Image (tube, rainbow, N blue to C red; front, side, top):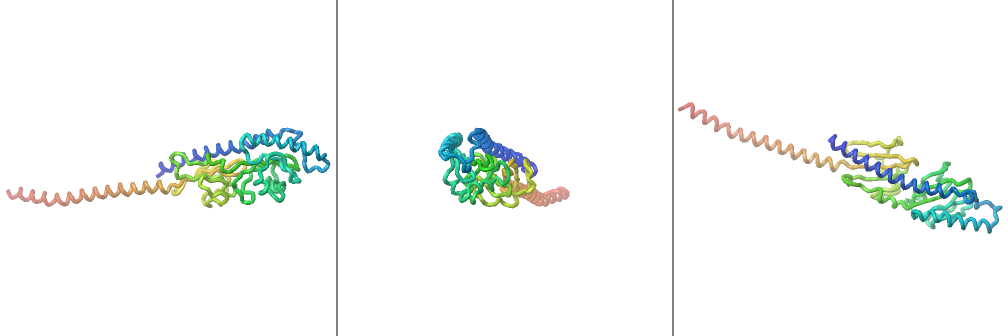
Length: 274
């Protein structure tokens, strides 16, 4: 049992680490791309909510910014790659789905998502888990929003090799499922899988399951759970069969001994009489 669990724990931890690296790379790509896009000072200093701006010049800047930001969105087919201003105007690529989710006050919704931080990853806006959003403060009156479809991660959360029974999850810090290869997005992960310590890179082993956990910089978690009950039941059945064979063998030997004993006694009696 110990050997089986140790081997499964190593494989589970390895799968969890692979998934963590792949998710981090996907998220860092959007973070890095937005950082590059937001280095253009004459665009980043722009404030669409400034009532003193010349309307013609404002329209011209926003048109240029939209073309500029949209070109970045095409590099990885992002759903959104835009800057939202305090007056809810925007420049860049902003999908109608995101616009509907963020209304009636788009800027304030994003500001709430930042929660006082300069950057944040957000999912589940208005209970919608189809998109993952990256938010970045541009200045006091502007917030960048980039997003991709959650199912873009489908190629990452796939059990491999001997991990057919494994379940892989991406959850927020509270344990709400953002993505799983078996669905369940938006629901809470089983309480027995939640560890409140926020530790990362650990593996838990018990009779029923092996769980490996990694915590991302944003507080989200990669969790891989390997159900060990099927594996253990095979070993239990094998042990029962082996025990049965041993007991049967002992019974056969005992019966042979019992049958052979009278014959031996008779032979000894006959020999002594002669």
